[in-house]
Image 1 (cartoon, rainbow, N blue to C red):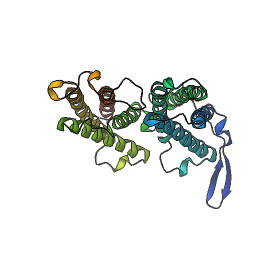
Image 2: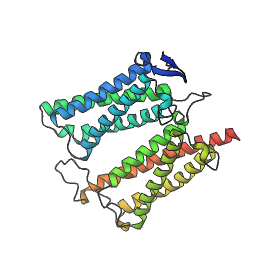
Image 3: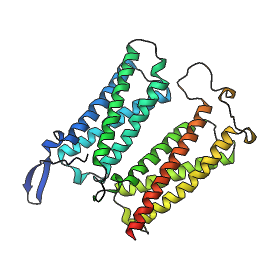
Image 4: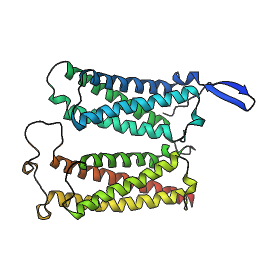
Length: 317
C-alpha cells in the first residue's frame, strides 16, 4: 500500500530566508522505521561474518561488499532525511531513494542466495557456520525490507513522480544489475576470447548496459532535457535496440558455448574445471550456463521495458 511520509521540520530564519535544520520525525514514520530495519539487518549481517572471517573467494567477497554497501548508503539516506538536506543532495531526491532501494533489493537477494549455496553449506559445524547462517537470515530480512520500500514508494497510476519510480525505471535497474552479474561471470576467464561471435555477445552486454546506465544517470541528474529528442522517444529507441541485441546474444551465446559443432561443451562432465571437490569458485561450464540464463532474463526485461516505453510514447502523442 502507498505510504505518505509527513515530515516535521525545525527551521531557523536568516536574512536570506528559512533554512532547514532537521526532520526529527523522519525516523518515526513507517518509511523511516523501515529504513532503520534495513540499517540494522545489513549491519548485523556483515558484523556476524566479519567477527569470524566467514567469507572467502569471489562469492564471499560479493556478499560482504553487498551488506557493507547497503548499510553505508542507507545510513546516508537517513542522515539526509534527518538533516532535511534533500534540496542540497547532488542527485534528484525524487529518483535516488527508490533507485537505490531497488538495487539494494537485488544486491541482498543475490547475496541471500549465493552466500548459503556456495559457501555456508560447505562449512563445518561450529561457530563460523552458525554466524554465517545467522548472517544469511538477516540478509533475507534486509532484502524483504528493501523490497517493501520499493513497493511502498513506486509510482501509482495517475501519480506524478520521478521516472525511476515507474515500471520502466525499475526495469532499467534490473537490466543494469543483471548485466553486472553477467560481467562478473565472464570476467577473469576465457569464455569468449576464442570466438568472434562470443566477443560480439560481450560487446552487446556492454553496449546495452551503458545505454541503460545513461538513462538512469540522466534521471538522477535531472538532465533529460539535454537530449535532442523527447525522453520517451529516446527510451523507446533504446529499448528496441536492446531487444534486438539481446535476441542475437540469446542465440549466439548458447550456440557457441554448448554446441560441439561450434566448439562448445554440451556436458558439464567434459569440463575439467568442474571437479567433484568443492571450491569457492564457479567452474567455467557453470559460468556459461549462468550467462545464458541471465541473457534470457534480461531479454524479457527489455521486452517489458519496450512495451511500457512504447505506451508512454503513444500516450504522449
